[in-house]
Length: 435
Image (tube, rainbow, N blue to C red; front, top):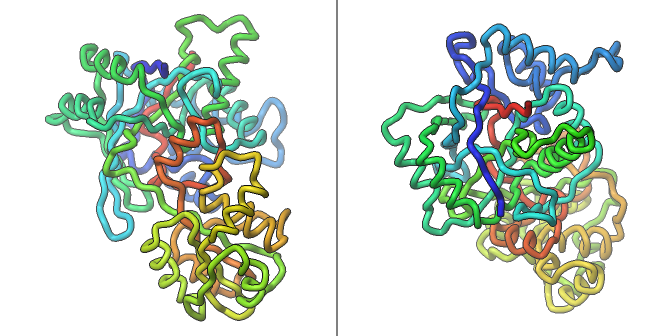
């Protein structure tokens, strides 16, 4: 069972920093160098100095981005910029945002979740991880002994029992609030009532948790825990047994998954006729329109079909958008080229796109990493722009929450960028000390 717990969070002292909006930041892995500079300039105590300190040409083992983060953290605590919660707490977290022309409220809560290795407990991954980001986060965790950024976890709760308890406990309490650069309103309430906390812990006990985002950070938490165990300092009650996590019910109305479209660089130029020659035996292919701006029409057709096997390809050579829909022979071919994967994995749009279309039928295996874009308007702008050339683009459906659950339960990992949970969780509301 995924044991969760309340913890004594480390939070910004508003009397010292003023507005929370000035000190919060997106997750470290989506911060560009330009945004890093902007966050540095925004406030001397912005959390970017902890989660993504700048690299200096003079860095060495004694003085580097990780030791500077640790030094900033120590100084901020000593100066009262960051203060420790007096009681173990759970933190209710709402995000109010607009997407696809609608307003949503995504509701969840922050807690400590026991860091059990994948395959040994009830926390399930859905994406593969890479060693580089895990080593980076382990260095930061080791030097700062703090969880700064939350893991994003999903859990089943058809009756919304857990969140209802927390909403009732906070309905007449004013929240802390921060607005991010995208206009997303983030609100947080502190719940330290032991009776409420015990109810939440009990209800969460038998539920599985599926990681939506933060796989590298979760595995890092497990690695850090193992590191302490090997050093002989890990006790049963050690705070490093638990990692900072946001839990959101899979049935929450504010939980939406946006697509991640692909723009392919430095691949062989081709036309729609080339697609028909290479894909025609396995896909039904039709012309959507000409010119980058027809991407809007192509995406509208894909959304209407609501089928993982339907996607759109843009061939820059003849400026045509083609709608392709997998046929029976295509499914048979997919089963052949991805025979080492579960049948449900082979139904994913991103799996069909990369394994069957790109790597096998178009012969582009080993291609350069594509540019990932979430909005069709941005796809069109990139295709129409002069700054970079993309011979091929693809619009593809995101994996669904149900697919995440189903594939996680059979221990399958999805292809990279199969999901994009919008908006990203904000970093800076509360930190979890690990000592």
